[in-house]
Length: 377
Ligand code: DHB
Image (cartoon, rainbow, N blue to C red; front, side, top):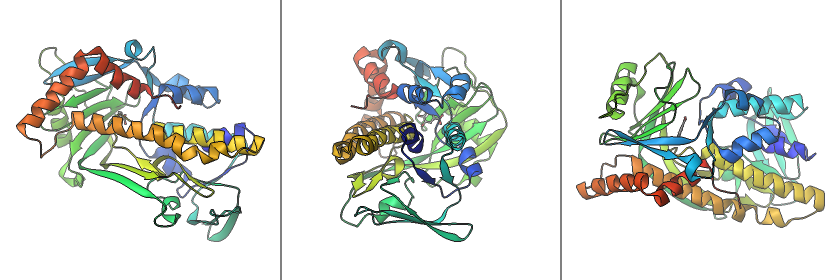
């Protein structure tokens, strides 16, 4: 996305990717785009398939004590909504657009390392087909994820880490089953959280709260479906989860993580390289795109007008929004999950909070405005 935004300003960028094109185009990840992200993809010419295939949603349901309570985004957040469209679909569209425009993407780059970013002439070193390459550049954008090489290349002591690890994870499946609801259902259940999401009118995406180190071998499909039925059960209005063949399954551990600052010399961190949110609320990809939008503006001001101010304030600009997104993701996680150390008091308080969020317009509005995406500035 950063190289796409920069290319629209006439600024050249080379994407150095560790994995194969096939792997990053197929790996199932998040799937909810904030309103402004969908708008940005369309405005910048990479939204044709998104417009055709993306599912626009104007609300979600919070399900607790067997009943649904709708949060109406359109009404509470000025007509805004979200678009359900897989992150790997965004990746496919961006790769196609970059290659069609003659952009450079190096796939399957090995032994990637970054050097010299504390001076004016950074170098990215890597191997392709066993051959060493040096890429001389003006700036390095560390968009290489939580496990990437950029953040650990910054000298120890220059970054402060803020972190919280949650005592649970999500077991996620992709199933060939028409979604049992037109909108996402976030279910609070005394045995743990469950989420019904989707990728298309034929494909459901479902999640169950599980142990952080859950062993997938203990979860044959039949057990997953039984637990999903149980946690998504309703009282009152009849509703039934639709089942189908399980296409993929996996376990995601959950943490909140931020490093400050998001810059060291000419190395700028963006996305998961700088911060991780627990998945509840679907903020990971959206926050990464917010970072690279700020970075593309800052680099554009530098190259076109010789201004350094936006580069100098990049970290502060991003972190101000990042921390609000951290707060929201932590809050959604706390609101909906089962915590083993909760006392009966905590459980009553959690239900009261769900009741409050779904009955007070003021409280529902704070959920809605965060879910559809906070403004950048
Ligand atoms: C999805 C993931 C989320 O974390 C979420 O809050 C909603 C939907 C998804 O993968 O569809």
